[in-house]
Image (tube, rainbow, N blue to C red; front, side):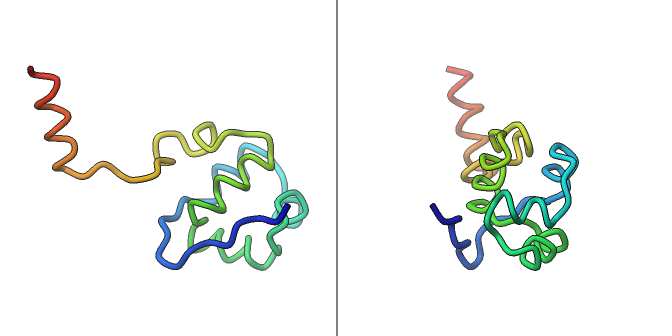
Length: 91
């Protein structure tokens, strides 16, 4: 099975939480996930695309929520969604 190819414009997450949790190097992370070490190094600066973050966390034995917490969501909540949710709780 091959790692997913990130999509252009995809949301990103910082790589540091995964590195801190796994205590492995970029080279070891590359070997574990199948992404080139050069790509992982670039993501350390620019952030990891969501699809790659999911794959990487799972390949390291973690659920992405355990690595990135609430920051790992399919879509961020917009103010309108939060307002709608608050109104639903009132009635």
